[in-house]
Amino acid sequence: MTDATLLAPFDDTVVRGVAETNRVDEKQLRSALADHQRTMRENPGVEDLVYEWRKRFDDAVLYRTPETFFVAVIETVWEEYGTHLGLDDYLLAAVVAVHQEQVLRETAVESGAIGENAVALVVSRPSPQ
Picture 1 (spheres, one colour):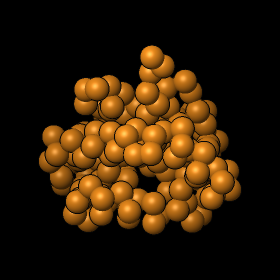
Picture 2 (tube, rainbow, N blue to C red):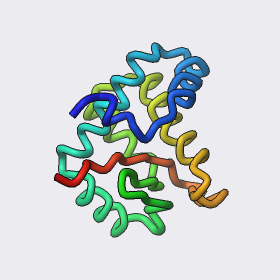
Picture 3 (tube, rainbow, N blue to C red):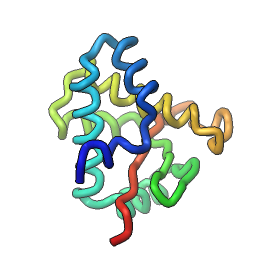
Picture 4 (tube, one colour):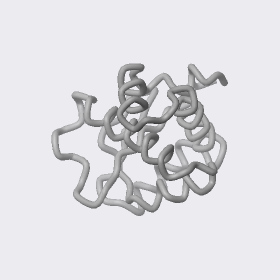
């Protein structure tokens, strides 16, 4: 699976804008985003993750398409991914900002759908084989 496939749910303008605003290298940000998507697919898998988040968090799934889940999770989920992927605080903040902005731009997600104590997360679904 290519990085382009893994990054399909993210608008280039969102990634570019977040990289610029957060003063992180865009190529490094794209790599971190792809690594995160790859990790979710491989361990334990997208459907298993989303099932678990549905059990743990109220209204975790904000919207879904055949290709993508848009979810809201607690901040510790992101902290765990940051640690697992070895991301420094700046790069992790940029990765989270891309996810947050992408969900906010998704017109099918109701305004205010991300709860007060939640953070957005976009999960790319693997193509059926």
